[in-house]
Amino acid sequence: GIQVEQSPPDLILQEGANSTLRCNFSDSVNNLQWFHQNPWGQLINLFYIPSGTKQNGRLSATTVATERYSLLYISSSQTTDSGVYFCAVARDYGGATNKLIFGTGTLLAVQP
Amino acid sequence: ETGVTQTPRHLVMGMTNKKSLKCEQHLGHNAMYWYKQSAKKPLELMFVYSLEERVENNSVPSRFSPECPNSSHLFLHLHTLQPEDSALYLCASSQEGSGNTIYFGEGSWLTVV
Image (tube, rainbow over all chains, first blue to last red; front, side, top):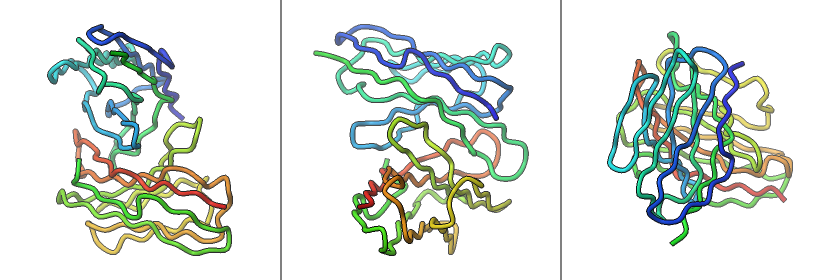
């Protein structure tokens, strides 16, 4: 099956700093999503981005499908950005979609 | 995100008990999912119900039994669980078709004693 690797596994930032999280995947996909898991366990969808670039406030993401990686950028980080960031991928070809394969996540801690 | 609600949020059960987790989605979606998150392991898809198909991860033991009575409700019936089944169980929903984001509930924390 498809392997998903995320780096770095852990990241500590001072408030206001910028960061880049990376997701590598081992095979072609047509579904890639980034999530933030808060300390209470809920997964919040940040981006659906199988290719190209998207921005939402201080967050942006870029996926280069041909090179099998995606990047999540966090600018001017805030303490509320702390948590675990997951990348998840799938190959959706008919049938049920969103049969996602998750990476192991990046644990981000933003210090005041 | 309050579009997908799960109950109970926390559950402690003995190995001989039978319990159920409930999920309801208010987003008008036509696909629902159970994912499992164990400590030190990636999230793992357990079951999918959609218009197109029901998908089952073959590695999920038979002591987990899903039920989807309609497109808005999903249950996970639990019986004779093991301590290693202790985990966060996440329900999700999406609208079938390409380019459709998946939305997760807040999860049910399960402890098997």
